[in-house]
Image 1 (cartoon, rainbow over the protein chains, first blue to last red):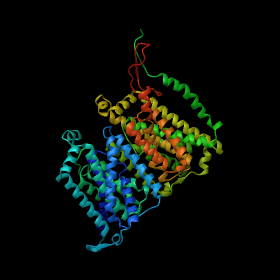
Image 2 (image 1 turned 180 degrees about the horizontal axis):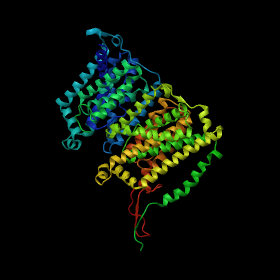
Image 3 (image 1 turned 90 degrees about the vertical axis):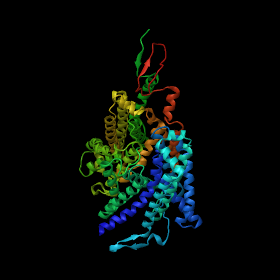
Image 4 (image 1 turned 30 degrees about the vertical axis):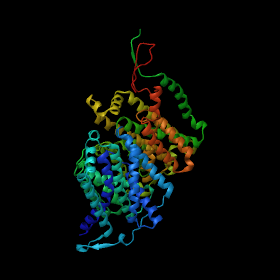
Length: 288
Length: 344
């Protein structure tokens, strides 16, 4: 029963990792962009929410009304102003530009807020739990986060496969040059894509900051977790990413059950094992 | 008329040799005319230059954009501290082992990370480094989370006297930097250098012309890991303390190095020199402003990448066709006609 408990808690933990991964997976799928600053955008969203909650008295989840549009604009502007100029030059330019953005965000937050750890407070929901069979109790909040992850991926699937915009995204992903010949403005579309990716990043950032303390240097490990979930699940497969998050969460829960200090390391080891056994992930869809 | 011939040296490279040789001699003599502050600064410049040359060889030539080189800095440092501390090994012997040890670890690591391509390779190397950092923080004999210190007895093995110890450490940093630069230069001038330059310019094309790109990349990866490990051991021999955060710091040992290479000019030997000088100068000027210099470095790196992707040295080459380290071959037509074609 104890192992069943670990499995359930780990799977729920995977929900937040899947949320971390959505933005990364989207920008890779559409623009072939690996955004090194992704983790820092998650943390930046948490700081924006911190400012909004302190400034307006809104609770963190309601603050998403402001945080989401702000991060959409940030994403749109960064793609339009910086990243669109790096698309033709191969692998290195986008990697290094996002590296630069990462360093700027981290040190900008450090200069603005100091190195103190922060947290967002949502109230009673944080500690509420429900009993299920066999005396296992699960937290309401992790359950909500997991449901949000499922809902987010389902709505992205709808966007990709049921709308004109989604068709354009898929066309650009398959063959950017031909898509342009067919009248798609790639640059605008890419900007829109990073903007939409940033909506999910903002949600992930706020939900994570309610659950965990954060500081300006908290971004890189979130990038790594998101990256691991994407690779485990298989590139370009959104539901795979959810499973990747769950695999990571379960591995961490098992590690933590052995010894609390083993939690993160166990996740990394699971990632490396899957990488060696199945290099393209469990359910690959796009080729890179 | 003399027939056309192939030349390697250029006027600029010969002039550079004439200027550089006495400058290097002056640096070697620094312990006899400079103070400890200068020795510290120049030792730091020396090992950063070596790290930058190695990263440039990896990313600029072999196309292996690693952001996990801090793994080998940390492994080299930990190897030195463990061997001298727990195993009572002589410090010079431990230094000699630290490099090959890091290279040895790089072999199984490459099996995992070489499965990833492009930017995913980059993040994969980073995960590996995190694994080493977390492992070091769990192993009791490595001091777990708080790390290890060098005892005074170990330092006395180098020299009982503080002044001459500083001088020896300084000269070792300078020597490793010169040796790494020389290895990179000679490697690029050799047959393998031609293969590397071909991989830099187009990996599929070089493979189709018979370059074994996998083997070349594998050898470069392991060799740079070994050199990085030795440099790491030397860095922490001077710092006297190592911890998982310091040893495997991505900011100190990789981000800064990447900025140097990119700003100076990736894919050239001269670039890392210039980038290192720009970085150290900016840091010394802006040291009082804390985080500002890192923000500024980030902005400069972005600006360089967008406006002049070949860096400061790439711009110089384009404009003045200078070569301080002649690694290419130039076809010289019958004199006195000036060189007409050149290959970088």
